[in-house]
Amino acid sequence: MVSRKASAGFQPEVASDQKPANKIRRQLLHVQRKKAKDSAHRAKRYGFKKEEAKNPRLKEDRLKRNIPLTIDRKRVWDDADSDVEDGLGLSVDVERIKRQKQEEEDELNRPLKQSENSGSDEEEDEDDDDADSMLASSDDEEEEGDDDNDDDDQKADRGRRKFSLPTATERATSPSMSTKSTNLNLAPEALAAKFPSLFEAEPRAPKILITTGLHSTLHHEAQALTDFFPNSVYIRRTAHRHAHKFSIREISKFASNREYTAVVILNEDQKRVSGMDIVHLPTGPMFHFSISNWVDGKRIPGHGRSTGHWPELILNNFRTPLGLLTARLFQTLFPPQPDLEGRQVVTVHNQRDYLFVRRHRYIFREKRETEKAVVGADGKEMKGAEGIRVSTQELGPRFTLKLRRVDKGIQRASGQEWKWKAGLEKVRTKFQL
Image (cartoon, rainbow, N blue to C red; front, side, top):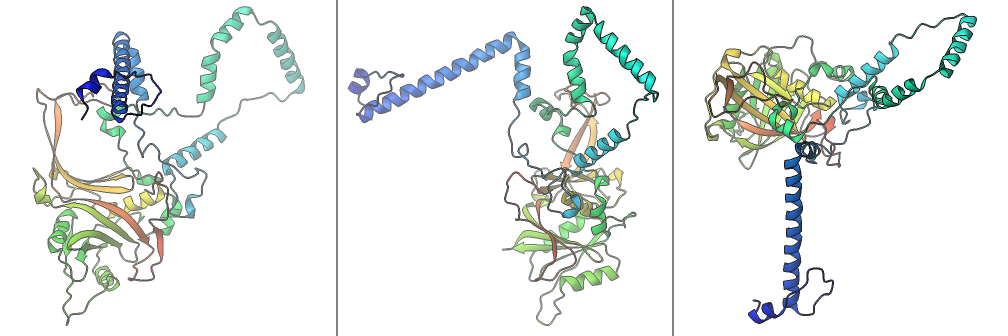
């Protein structure tokens, strides 16, 4: 507690570099310096605000530069010249590599200018060029000087696209700037050759068998997955002492003989959902996921009830070979032709190698007076959607997946022959999906 006499008799200077020996005076000096620092910062901020009010261009430039430095923006990619066929552990942008190869092919196939083969004509042309260069007028020089910047920009942009970073305002007003749909046609040929059963020309209609581990109590959660995955059935695994405890390989063989396309095994830890294994039949591969943040549909506020319609599937932000392989797995779990009249959509969004799985129902309605207009990526009102709004209602369940391992085939509990395994990369800014 500072005494009144000490506070009245001592008035420290902010700019003083001396350190008083008295503890109370040091405290007062620290408070005084902190107030002066906050006051100077506030005056500087209000000064910028007054300048931006006079010149709105300054505010636009500041917003363009004001891009948050997140982990996504720090993302590190492997060398673009790396061979995609080496394995699934490479963090390379497949779309960017394919675009670079296409630009190189276009550059090589670009037609050359026709040149005259006669030596006499070439000599005459050289003489004429020399003569013309000597007769350049001062007006031409001035025009060339004015167009130097334009020529440099054209040379720098020749044969390349301009990539501009979106501003914070554009990302906030347009959801398409923060998400990127997955193009499965960009999958490398080597990836399709390694997993031919996943990359079939004519995909089969999904038929899924859902089960759990032995001694499991997740019967309600497994039954909820039968509503989530179309054309699926749940079969319990008994652990009775007189019953035969079937292994995953035996269950997969049983399901493959009955024309099932996938087996989903729900794992638990302390009576909670902890993981999910997906076996692509008949011979694999087998994907191991860990599950977090499982929320049942009945516990979601304002949830809806699902119907028997086949949902649409949205895959976002899968960009690497491993990401395309994972996206292809989810594509095989849902029918290629959804029932649009059901208005149900399942979204698998990849963000920093975490897969956020959500299921919604959408409905088109009229715009309310209190709602704002739909804005496009350019910040202007989108044409054709002036009086239309889309409302969504989550159906559930919602959960988050994390890919842990990709096995070559249907593996036993020990001795896995895996194609990819998580935890080998220690760089936080390098993502695998």
